[in-house]
Amino acid sequence: MIEKPLHELLDLIDKKEITAKDIFNELLKHIEQRNADINAYISVIENFEQKGSVLNGLPIAIKDNIMLKGTKTTCASKMLSNFESIYDATVIEKLKQAGANFIGKTNMDEFAMGSSCETSFFGPVNNPWDKTRVSGGSSGGSAAAVASGLAIAALGSDTGGSIRQPASFCGVVGLKPTYGRVSRFGLVAFASSLDQIGPIARDVKDASLLLNIIAGFDPKDSTSVNVEAPNYLEALSEDLKGVKIGVYESVLQSAPDYIVRSVENAIDTYKKLGAIVQKIDLPHIKYSISDYYILACAEASSNLARFDGVKYGFRAKGESLEEMYVNTRSEGFGAEVKRRIMLGTYVLSSGYYDAYYVRSLRLRNLIKKDFDNAFRQVDAIILPTTPSDAFKIGEVTKPLDMYLSDTFTIPANLAGIPAISLPCGFSKNNLPLGLQILSNAFREDILLRIAYAFEQQHDFHKKIPIME
Picture (tube, rainbow, N blue to C red):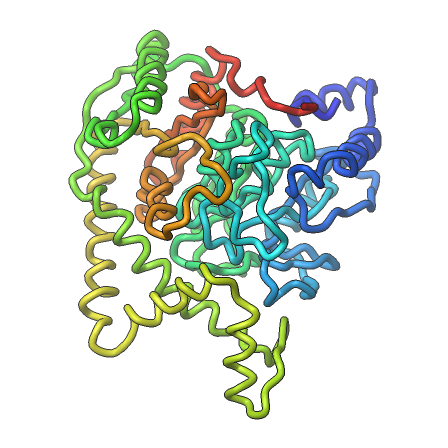
């Protein structure tokens, strides 16, 4: 049963053909048998409660940077390896109210800083399609769990592609909502102006179902926007007549042939469905990587200053307070986290603040205006999710090469707009490829409609290595 999506399991529960407890127990058994191969979970939760409401007790996996009271929230870091949550994130409260159980906390890149799930203190996450390859990051544990049958659905967080890129690599659906659509209260911050929580699921209908539950205004989150969320399930339709989809062809010129072909095949599908496909221009998108790594690192430097060994988390020994601080941060953080903290501290330092940080803020505004102009012409934009299929573990050793794997996902975070990745084919290595769809802010309804229409024409999302 665990190979089925949430919505199908809910139908079977309604018909009294199965129970949520059956599913929970089957998942636990599968995790016991397979998690050592995948390393998708940092911790597993074995407590089941009988619940009603929307989810009827079905279990959800949670990325380990989201607070779940009474469980460890490690952010896959030595710094928080023994930290226990003392409250629930707002998304957790909403899931509980909707009748969810929780199956475990998933592995990730340390403090969500990475694109491969290789920076985790608890070891890398292996791709279920090929265990010698990465799952993507930073929400690689959530994506790998859903793809391998270790979870029915999961939550991740997305700062520069951390939901969509692993979803693409693992052959599942990953949705980054509009910035402010889903509460960030209880999410351990990496870059506060970019982070957003979203669902990772087997299909678009499940992603819509979960977004219905977690979306909405939250007064506890100062970045939450008080805009009413529609019923996303009701927005799903196969009718795309009159819908305008934009293609930015300059992006495709830098992608390998098999990535370009997957997007061109998607364009053909959309034309057959009655959509109008037209070219658009995004002149500043080519600067997204540079812009992102200045802004994200600056915010990381500020946010991670709180991990000093005094209030909570790991504490190293030292003969003085200053020595304790230095030793704690030296020993508690991994190499990539320290690299980003140092980069961020540099661009915020006196003499460089205006030259780097302030200019990057201005560039971010230009990128946002490019998307504003594009969405006056079209309802959505399609791009590849990633510039390649999943690479080998240990293959990408240069930080800049790793950063480039987020080339196509970062622009949506800088602009604060929603974006989804869904399976759209396979590479010659028989590895999944993702199609990325972007829409205007708070138009997840049109985004999900366009994604659903494509999905109904193909069965890529049904080909997942559940039991291999």
